[in-house]
Length: 190
Image (cartoon, rainbow, N blue to C red; front, side):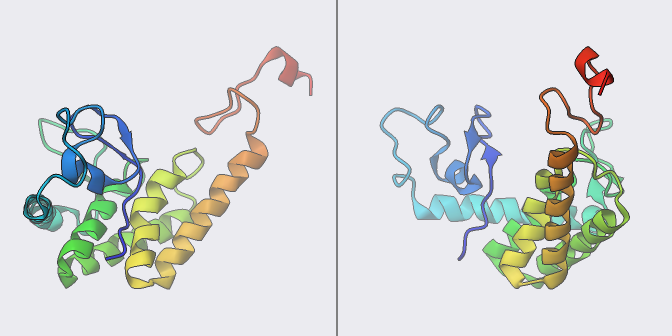
């Protein structure tokens, strides 16, 4: 398998990781037991964890095939929302990882459906003027393109990259973020 892992965090200690697979194998170097190496966990344990993760994704497909999860819980549940939040890329990333592990076409269908909302979002410029474009497009559109060669996913990812570059051109001074330029005494006279 190609391994579509992306930057994430250790679920135990929240240390930044380069690939979610590292967490499934033995946690990160900061929280795994002394003397436990990355290759010392049994392959069967990893497969069992991946099976459980895919099962959880499958259970949530009925609620989140055509909509995204809210960025935070409401009464201990994550309601479905339109694709207009900075966290909306994470769920399609989980769906792509589940498809990579299982090859079940139900996950691929969901990934394509969600990707269409990302293409629509970037083409219509809905909530895209921020620095989190990578969080939106990498786990969703880039992953789908790498998994299945979707040209629409590729287009959405490239448009998102272009959008992010516009921020570099317009907001390249320190302190400029969240979609607005911070006005300072020196910048107000320019």
